[in-house]
Amino acid sequence: MDLSIDTLFFLVELLGTAAFAASGAVLAIERGLDLFGIVFLGCATAIGGGVLRDVILGQIPPQAFVDYAYMLTAAMTSLLVFVWARVRRWESTRVFVNGPFMNVLDAAGLGIFSVIGVRNTILAGFGGNMFFCVFLGMTTGVGGGMLRDILSHTTPAVLRKRIYALASIAGAVCYYLMRPIAPKGSIAAATLLVVVLRVLASRYRWTLPHIDPPENKD
Image 1 (cartoon, helix red, strand yellow):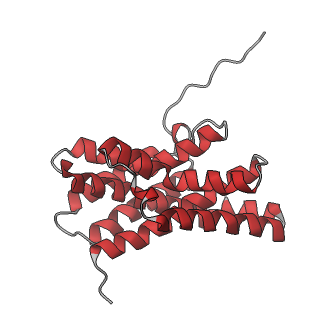
Image 2 (cartoon, one colour):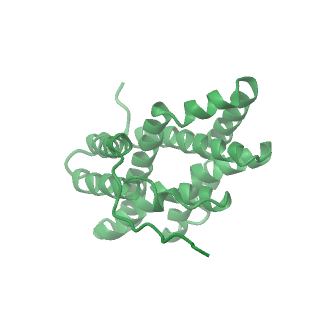
Image 3 (cartoon, one colour):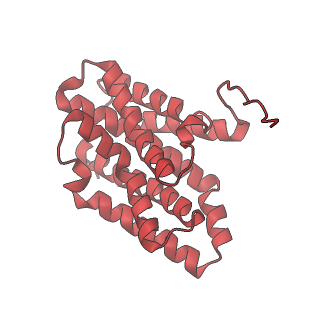
């Protein structure tokens, strides 16, 4: 079956939406939120980056509030995480979601949203501005996670997580440069690049240089 480029983007975007919603729901459970809070944080994580991108592009209302497939996918994923945590032991659920499989799925979501951010920026008429395309690709990829962490009073993971924003930027650049040559292949190549960078960064604990804060001796 030969999928159109629009159908392919729609399907991979739903996959990324589910992956990000799961990470938001797990953090909500860890913070002791109720069912509404779990679903809300899961949805905010899943669609936050896309909403921010659309607002910057002047596309009002944002796509996530026009096509309910995204919100429904995020809400259903968050509910499934809640039910799984209730039926099974929470510790096993947390270990699974924070394990290698979900780490790869989260990386895939990051790559998918980074690509979609670049594509939507190009479709909005800014294809000649590489910096803007890559910037909104990164914003789409990391925006939802930043919103999740801010709402849960956590230092945003993008500011401390191993090679996260840089992986998003690398995927966005890859897609931007490859898109004219291979419209469909560039999606897979950019997403795979982000997944490989994130998995290697987690496996070998790659981090950017930082300064440890001085100890408070008072």
